[in-house]
Length: 222
Ligand code: SF4
Image 1 (cartoon, rainbow, N blue to C red):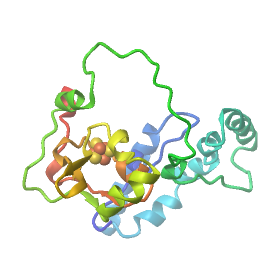
Image 2: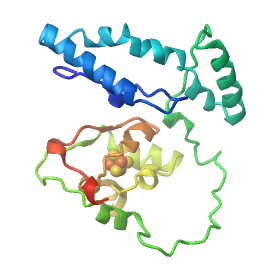
Image 3: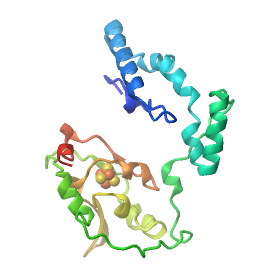
Image 4: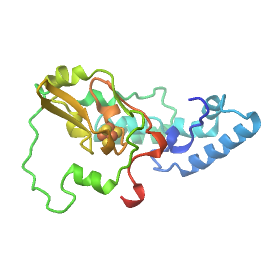
């Protein structure tokens, strides 16, 4: 990323078993400052970070979180082993992409919807969006890019039932029907920038990009 240095949580430096990342955020921030002072440019930062004590600490705990992807029992046993081995396990557990956990309609179990309806506000997603007070300039560049909207009304509709209309917490994606048939409508002004759509879309055709000028929810009022 030209001109940028990733540090702290943005670089994924959380130590999961300690649930602690402040020390790494401060440490990487100081190292980044030293790097800029010494070189005047971000090039070389990635290699410097990877060779540092920050990564030495995180290498020891790399297998904790992926272990829980195989279930709670495996995760607990794996955590015990990793604690004893102090990160010296000769393997590194891999995780599969989040969207690969989605099941197609023909194999998925029917969801149990017998829960009691909530009565306290906000009761629906659009009410939540109202409280989030999102603000976007109307003429800002598109920040939700769907590379092939035909898939949405053909393959995705039949295989997955358009999950974007359900996993988006702000009701941004809608399949609307007009005279020309169904089409994807993107209500981008509602977006609260959780990036779920980019991660969870089963066809990986949605690209969330950083919105212009810090547009989005008013976090102070949330
Ligand atoms: S980033 Fe989150 S809120 Fe915005 S469109 Fe994607 S899923 Fe919806």
